[in-house]
Image 1: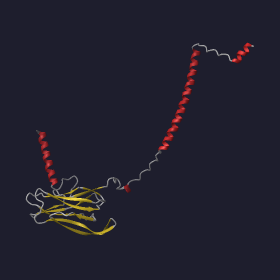
Image 2: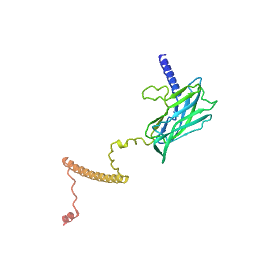
Image 3: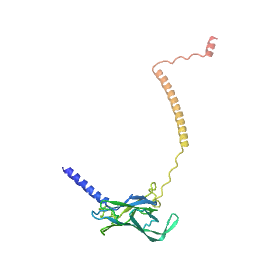
Length: 258
């Protein structure tokens, strides 16, 4: 029963915190590649049980300006884009850009809203994304038809509980295969690797070694055979066995006949 109570409490806590996290204004997808272009959707849920969302505004980071920002038409909503000058101008794909988008706002037309228990996605195409930062924090303001406005601008602090109204964040990651490229100039130079033998060199070396070993084996075998014969003769002499008489040669036979 205790185990079941603990499990039930943990499950309830997980569902509760998960529901709160889901109700936040978030970006989808939450990650993008540094230096690339990305289509980011701002998911805006209505947390109120009695009011509906009729306006949403997001601010892009001024310290990391993005050269090109495009919006997608949304039926039943109007869009308004404000720009700001950048000094010095930024270079993007061979062009100098003097103005960049600072804020984007969507306002519902009469009779339209994001009702309780609903959410809407506001899509934005942006790029090239900066390559010198790991995330883009984009504060937003959500306005309800009862006049209440909620600011989603609280920063997330690592190791601390999630704030009540965190700012939407787009995490930027390195391009696949580009890991370890950052900070190469700060690393100590690596020692040059020794040249490796080519397949032909390896085969020739192995062939010469095999021949040398074969010749050495034959020489050892011959020496062993001679030693064995000498040991055999010595053994016969020690045992009293007279060696077999040597047969007279043909020349000795002729002399004996004479």
